[in-house]
Length: 260
Image (tube, rainbow, N blue to C red):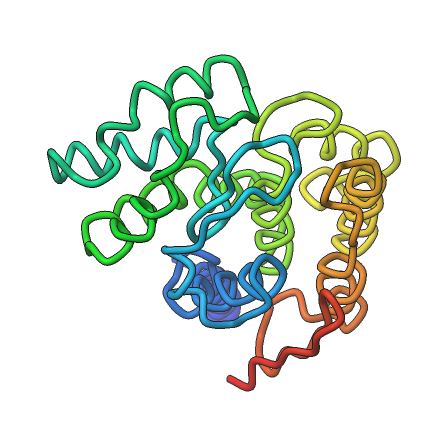
C-alpha cells in the first residue's frame, strides 16, 4: 500500500500532466490562438476565418499562395486541398484544375501553367462552400499542426514551442533540406539540446529561432523576420511557455493583441 505522502505526490503529478495535456496546441482555445498568430503574420489580420478565400502570387517561387496558411501550387499542399475537396464535392469549381496542379507539384514549378486566367476566381468561389473550408482545415491539421505538435512533444516542448514549430513548418515546409523544417531543427541541434535530452526550453527555442532566422533572411519574400523576433522571441523572453493571453506582439509593422 502506498503511503499518504506518496499518494499525494502521484496525484499532484497526475494533475500537472493533465494540465499540460489541456494546454496542448490541438485544443480549441490554443488552436484559435495559433491561427490568429499565423494570420497576423501572413495576412495582417487576426480574423483567420476570412483567409479561406485568400489567393495571390507573392513572388516567392512557389506559384500561387492561398488559403488559411498559404497552401502553394508549386509544393503540392494546394493540390492536396483541392483533391480532398473534390472527394467531398465532385464537380466543384476547382476540380478541373487537378491535372494542372498535379503537373506543377510534380515539377515543383512556380509557373501558373494550366491555371490562368480563371483559377483565382474559382478558388474564391469555392471558399464560400463549407466543404472547401473543411478540406483546408483537414490538410492544415494533417500536414502541419499535428506533425508540429507531435515533434514538439517529443522534444519536450509546451504550447509556445509547439507553435514555434508549427509556424516554421507552415513557412518552410516539411523535409530534411537545409531550408526546410527538418534542416532548421538539425541546425539547432548542432548548438543546443532539446529539453527531452536535458537542455533548457529557452536555450533550445532560441537556437531553433536563430537557425530559422538565418534561413528566412536568405529566402525570397521571407526576409522580414518580425514574426520571429517581435512575436515568438518576445513570448519566449517573457517566459510565456504556455502561450497564455494576454499576448502582445508586432509583425510587419503592425501591433496586435489577444486579450483572452
